[in-house]
Length: 536
Image (tube, rainbow, N blue to C red; front, side, top):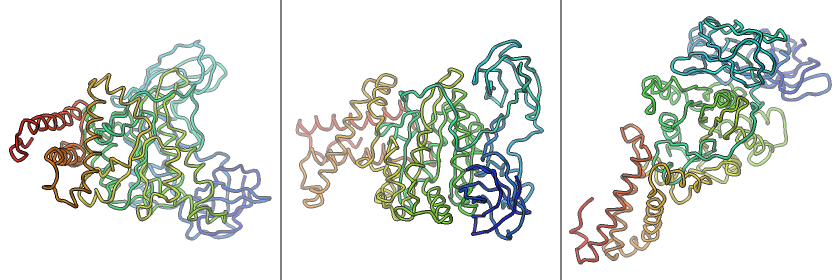
């Protein structure tokens, strides 16, 4: 399917190729820029180009690729750094320098690297799609290779292979490969979706103790500039109790991504002691990279996350930030001259976000194992306005809402999660789990902690009028304990050893503070003056 360029309007290109389907990939111009069909009209197609169209001219050639935008799923993804189209950025830097050159196509994985395949089946076995065929050693990770379709195995090749080599053959004559493309906009299949029952431990006390996230759950944390969204998301990426982390830098500043990568290369995973990058995939589409590729980047990231979920792994997808993705969607919609919705965003913003959130969850895979995909997404509302469309669309579908408070950030309280406005819909199940697995006192201490914070908030207004000395002794004690909870428990420094707090350590710390309140309260009843109480 070939044709020519009829018109150009920024990244939107019109071509006269017939036979294209919606979301098919197209190469435009002599430079071979990659684009995606976003509208079909009689005798022509509208293509959204993922790269810089500067220098492109009318009547240059165009060719359909007869396939949608897809990711290559195979051993070798872990530790990789890709752009929104899954081009390997380290390889691109070697070929073209620090900036991605338009029209440069590089295969995402190293096709010359040798892997070792260990079969788990035998010739003659009948398999269904998703059944285990064997494993590939990828560092310490045993990478399962599953059957792409049902049928009878004719043979499996044990030993060394490259990604272009078949590792076996089916009885119908089709070769079996350890690599397979997958369309990024299509969710990967599974047997059934299950209800989340286990917590996603992040190491952040405010999250794990007050607003727990479930494995397979979704969470957002909107906040204005300077509220610590990026640092919080990076801390969760470093310390979350998951098997695989997929981090999508969607429209963020390049220096922030460079800092992230530098830390991830040097840090160790607190759960395994291995280098952190061994369990991490980074998808980078910074603010100076093409807008259309930014829109595709979160689909590239979630497709790779689903790939590892289907192996029975617990996967965490982090996106920083979903607002930059929505802005790219708005820019694309505007270039297509679509009817704008609220604040210029397309009218289908909510449905696109809901469809993306729905790809999270705990599933029974085709192979019979259980895997999970959790999503934690940052939102950057302009001016910290939580009534703007992106935040509101996310609130309709997310299970946890972490409100990042500008006032807390100004007081240098990080993470700046407001403990009165935030909420978790997974709270009952997760608290019951911590009661059973950590301590039966978890829910009671948690209730006492929230009660102290709520009473302190009510006393604050009174204290501002009459002064702290005008309060009763018990109320002064409560204000003092609430201050300890805020500074010693809810606040964590991301650059010290306190950046990560395991659940048992979290419970021990808050239990000590609550116990101090109880002891001091008893002493007050016995006539001890407030100034004579112990400091801690």
